[in-house]
Amino acid sequence: MDLKDKKIVLGVTGGIAAYKAPGICSLLRKAGAKVKVVMTQAATEFISPLTFRTMTDNLVYTEMFNDHPVVAEVDHIELAKWADIIVIAPASGNTIAKIAYGIADNLLTSMMLAYRCPVIIVPAMNTYMLNNPATRQNLQTLRDRGMIVLGTHIDLLACNDVGDGKMLEPYEIVDEIDTALRVKDLAGKKFLISAGPTIEAIDPVRYLTNHSSGKMGYELAREAYKRGAEVTLVSGPTALQPPKVSKLINIKSTQDLFDAVNENFDQTDVLIMAAAPADFKPKDKSSQKIKKEEKDEMTLNLAPNPDVLKTMGQKKKGQVLVGFAAESENELVYGQKKIQKKNLDMIVINNITAKDAGFKTDTNKVFIVDRDLKVEDLKLMTKTDLANVILDRTLEKLK
Ligand code: CTP
Image (cartoon, rainbow, N blue to C red):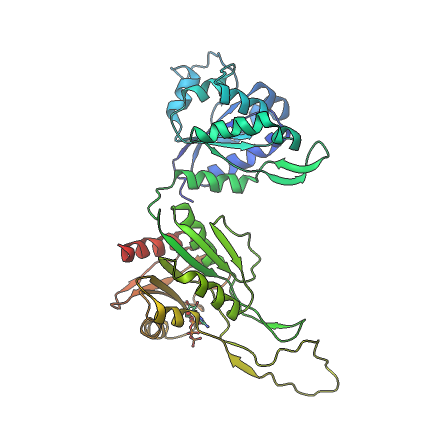
């Protein structure tokens, strides 16, 4: 998240989804953004301005004409000038229509005649209202004007219909705000990123796996996408919500991972292997559940899996290859060897025994080593920040 000191005007219109808008304010404030809320009269029927006043620590704007002393200029013009981005969430069919036609009959719609920054429209309404040709056309008009129109979820709606029209969740909206405000320094670049563990079936019930949570790979994919890259994420089974990317490929085994990476490799500019593939798999997978019977002991024979990164290292034609090495001892020595062995441009090495680093944590402490064995000893940081450092170094290699 890169929203520190960003100035955000949140427009709230009349709809039941208005109850979720304070959640957006809360996430924005936590990310260090400054938020001013503009409400339509209908929105105040659903939620009190005092809620937003408290959550944003700013005045809440509801009236077209007022005499509050702190603003010298006309509110709708001042707000439009102040904003780095305007987000309307929820955006009702009525307000969408007014903006499309340039109607300025309240503070929010007047501001939408005076805006000069990026705009995100977050629709929320009943399925039939959303699918009405008028709404469809109005949303297209806003898209054609360069506004970002977000989608909706299908769910049980407040009107008791099950259908399309539920507003995105606050965290999804905040992610979109962050994306819209980012510098697109990776635009035009194709990234293939792997994440998470693999699982190797023993029988239909059991499997072999490892402790990888997928967090590091997911942060890399999320941040690369926000910075404008075309991102294909190849993910092993994880408990995480996948980030928004260009293409998501779910895999299970190391062989699946190999196939997915191999198929996409020729078209990519960068391959980042943050996945933790199993090096071995059960030699003979049983098609039926293995019975315990009267055995005292059981032996599992293992056969090697392909080394995805090493194979791509042999195949590469100009692609930048980034590997990871999670070690429990002598991390620099083992990590550096992997650069040569797998023909990498860069490796990210961590010691999984270090505090707050490695599997399942939100932070990591790593060394980044490049082909010339230049070592960068990074401080403990969040996996999101680390993802951006890795992407910065990758961009240098791409140049
Ligand atoms: N990797 C891979 N295919 C494998 C195993 C690992 O592509 N079958 C990749 C990982 O995604 C990582 C890098 O290779 O980017 C190093 O993984 P690691 O498990 O540390 O290395 P190994 O070569 O498996 O060596 P070892 O297990 O002996 O440490």
